[in-house]
Length: 324
Length: 252
Image (cartoon, rainbow over all chains, first blue to last red; front, side, top):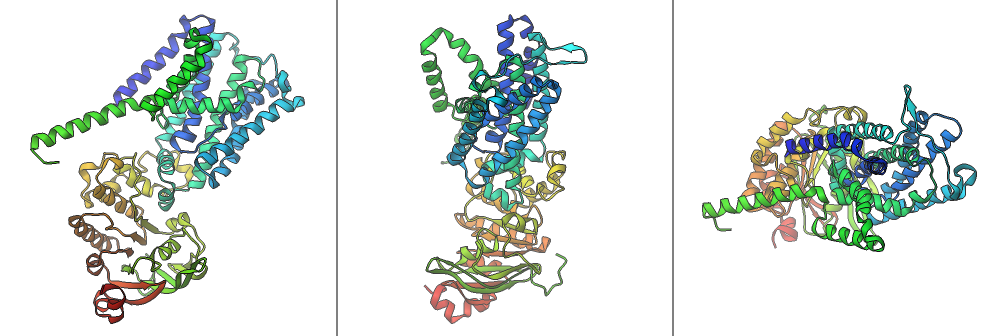
């Protein structure tokens, strides 16, 4: 199983490196768009999937990241200053958003984070002096580094891919350190976790902060990809969409965001033929998925394994002639 | 475990807790000595659980004092108590279902190692693998060590649950009905295990349990609670011979 997952990951990475080079501009753009959502939902997967904190405010961090870079670049600062500041800023705000989670959980926490998203969105829309309001911020340049310009679509794609891989590896490392178990313990049973010395306050706050930092990086890359931002992509609706991406991919599965973001970003493109019916088809597909695969697409291998094991176990019982 | 032999591990003094008009615990005092297995029995509603929850920092008593190794811990929460050497099991199963048995044991002790920051760079098993395997052997659950805890039978999960409480080598372990829902053959096994652990680890245990044979066989001393008050404290023999206890609790 592990080997298979590793092979799949390797094949996926190779595809990510070589396939876009064969695509036209729109295809490259879509791939970049997808990867940016992969980065954002990797962070959200940590918050929701690993640590079990129901957050409906992720798009706010995505927006804070995008505006941080856009405002700084407009003021003449480098993208390379904006990117870490976007991550850091979101980390700090994410830490603050974690505090309600120490008091309320489940749907109540979802509403608290939803309120936060709305508040951030209102600031983006109303504070024209800072954000340009509904007119947004124009002409956000793409970065360059060491004399290499990432202005071209393909070059920019590779930059995003490199950052996604680095962030993916960092998250992989974190989840395979003792932190991964602590987050899982917090999600599965916080009371028991605390009785074993797991600082559930600390891990709750950090699950929000780290998840938010990932969204901040994604937002920064998003601003530079589309080169024009207004408040529209950072609504509560966008947060719900990101939540959906995590759930569809498989919360708590490391590779879940790859599939979830693909469903959220690429499936709508494929469904263009449906035109006005697009949302209906998409909605129906999600309903079916929730009914038949409530743990997400990546739960399929686990389900098959469990099925095989129970079949083997019943065969063994039958062979031994044991009454059940 | 550095305390002298006569210094109590746990000392509870005149503990009181009321819920509205109901005095759940009405002035309870007792001591648990180093290495002692201390049983708490009493009918339903006698205040055992409220007492337990106070000792574990889940609730704050109205008045009274709880001392752990001489330190006043009355106001501390579950996390601080665990860090000071209090382990516990729960009345209902509380294993982490999606983790393997081995990982359940590792997570039960990893937070006692280093700082949060240093654990970010620690190996996945926090170098606790050998310790976990030793407990897995002792609890006879080696054949399921790599299975997800949620996939095990009730009895096996109960064993994992108890083993978890011992991973961080606590001075004091509070066991809340370790035999609840366990079949009779396993009850003996749990009793043997707890005696072994008490011998090898020198920790003190406090056990709440309704199974009288189990309590009488396992515990060095027993406290009988009735209506929020201590009716008697003594050895199993003394408790069995206590006329008042027989009338109020054991006799019926």
